[in-house]
Image (cartoon, rainbow, N blue to C red):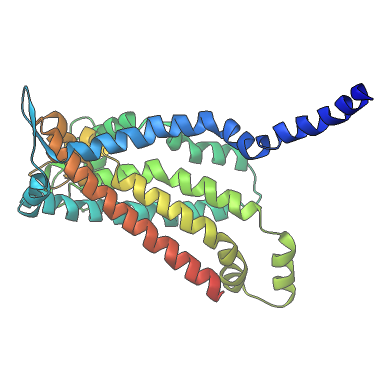
Length: 307
């Protein structure tokens, strides 16, 4: 009898001992990923923010509180960099999105050689950004590049000169290079979203007599809206923090005409060796991008509720 009771109690005790595991088990699976995220993302973020409250010199650092943030209020170079960042981001995003949408709509239709065109369209996204900037800098060079001579032949320039050397036009060079580099991102993501739209919806709209524009605005665009919102938000953040192309092509010049916040952070940290001030500017950029993301997500949710 004792043995039977023991055998009966043993499974209950096992279940009682294992009852705490279902609540702990998910964390055991998530643990390695959480540790990696904290180590790679959260720790550098905290360290970077802490640097913004310190003043660094060659051999020591001292706590200055909000001194670095107060210095930003009177920094004319930072103000110009913010304006340049807005121009750089909006100009690049505008052309990338509409060209990418046009390519996605084109590639969504069957035609001869579509796979070859897809490979060619997606190729710029695979090129390293450093190499892209170097290539476009050569293309705009009037000695070794053809673009200045083409612009001169079209009557857009009085003589073959590099637009990168003129403060009034220098920003267009990195923007053009960034558009070439970023169009495949929108083309890929929007094409994937187009493939997920049921063809029956377009067929039903065509039977009802809807025009091509009505089918696009009433059927295609609502399905693309969630993808457009997330891709625009991500690409805006990437462009605003993207310093490679500008630094390779112009190094922020001439006369600061292409100096964005991202390049200003790089120059402050690694050329001026002012890591504290560079960290403060980086925190400012982080806050602005977070506010932008919050506003965009709020607009998307309001549109989803009203639709």
